[in-house]
Image 1 (spheres, helix red, strand yellow):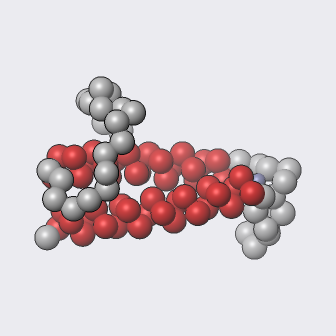
Image 2 (cartoon, rainbow, N blue to C red):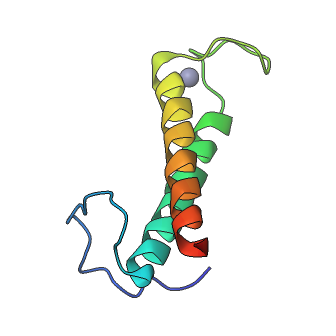
Image 3 (cartoon, rainbow, N blue to C red):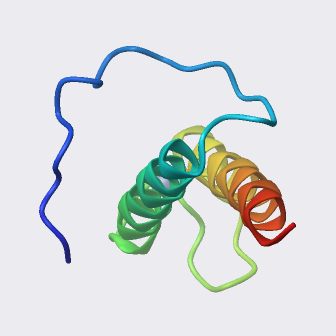
Length: 85
Ligand SMILES: [Zn+2]
């Protein structure tokens, strides 16, 4: 885990677009990584509202987490594609 070097940019949401400098894209990727890890931790925590078992229905909160993880992954994939071209 690397130390966060740029805390000042927090709270300034950058528009998601192609053509941003590579450094920003790496930061974005790091942020998405953290967000995914955080959401995953939320999902794995025991929850009285979720149905048990891997196929159990998730409560609204955790269904939202799952949706967000999928969205973060898509964004991360898009960023990785951008970096490798
Ligand atoms: Zn739940």
